[in-house]
Length: 438
Image 1 (cartoon, helix red, strand yellow):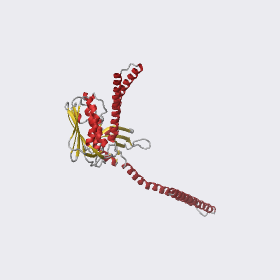
Image 2 (cartoon, rainbow, N blue to C red):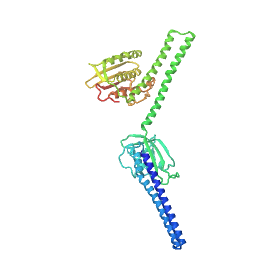
Image 3 (cartoon, rainbow, N blue to C red):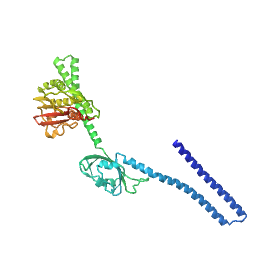
Image 4 (cartoon, rainbow, N blue to C red):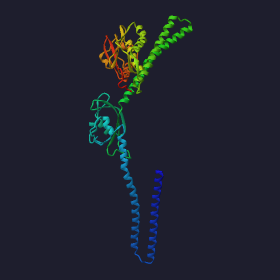
């Protein structure tokens, strides 16, 4: 209805305008006819006639232009509304936008600039070099003012870094654009700078590349071993020269590689759980039951390496309220880690409980972890450079996943270790969840 009303109103104004022009023309012709009649009778001076025609033409011209100017004024009156809308739009963008003059001074900026740069001071009339001191990936300073003022065309760079007043280093993607007129000329030597924080995006891209590299490397070896063992087995069966012991040996070899692949799939699945924002279910978990189940599950693997496996359940444990799946996965990761890096001695599973918290400790007599590595062992995809750990394959996800799941249960994991003296990982979680993370 609104669209139709506007259209009929516009048509009506056009009709009125045409009618006024038509009426003016009729009046003009009538006057002209009158003048010629007077001329024939020699009642009026010819010079007066010319002056009268000029006057009438001027009146018509002024009338036409006044209507045109009224339209122009209407358009001009609507421009402030457009400007306000643009301001609102620009201020609600996630990207920072800055307008710079020919000297690199800031003449205009939006609200996101202050948010990204983590400042609340006014930026007007400040120089861009002062507001945004940038560095490259090597930590070398960048002359941002010079780069902007010498820009002839639009350019983008996503490898520049800015340090906030809080000391946080963020990675920025900057687009520099000269402001040009309709003829492609930067008359005022002014520029637009558009930037956004891409720190998280670039970190995710790097993690994705690391993940693909590690997974492809770790998959290659077990697949090659399993394929070779099964091919040999197939060949021997074909020639009917297979011995029972050799047959079992090749099958065991393939089975171990398939189990390793299965553990990798489990790690990836657990990674998804650790990083998801899904709400988790809380249930009553019997600590003694869980401890016995885990002990029975991993005892064969411990004995296969000629290690002793001890279970120490201290006091009356009873139940706690937590997510049983996550709780068991954390302990499984810690036990698996202990088995992997312990070649002689023992592994001990210790569970103790007080009024507030439950502590589960996995203590081993393995190779231990250096102080420098202790700061990084919970990082995603981290593998120590120690040659002894490099002998064992893995994705570098186990401890990262364990810590992530522990945080979801409102808990934490601590580490005590000395090189050649073993390690102790301790999971601490509340007996009742105060606030379970999503």
